[in-house]
Amino acid sequence: VQLQASGGGLVQAGGSLRLSCAASGSIFRINVMGWYRQVSGKQRELVATITSGGSTDYEDPVKGRFTISRDNAKNMVYLQMTSLKPEDTAVYYCNADIRGGGLMYFVKYWGQGTQVTVSS
Image (tube, rainbow, N blue to C red; front, side, top):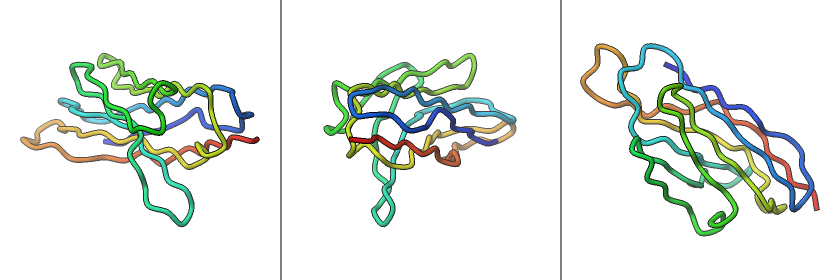
């Protein structure tokens, strides 16, 4: 099982970006999926999560600007980011709790990270 994130890049303040993350491999079920971000020298922080049923939760700095969504049929999670600010600059990581084929428990997987840079 692996997660592959994409969609990062350089954008001006006020602009938008959409991140995507695909889960692949022998997957039986995916529970919570989420996005985290990390600035060099700082701890990785939660951005948003979404359950298999579509319930979402956002950290205060991104509320009203970011939208997390998922496509359960495609094992994908997305992060639509609007009104971007320079302080949103970070490496963004996707995360998912996945029960692989043949297993009876969930394992937390991480994507490789995608850089988002917001210029002022």
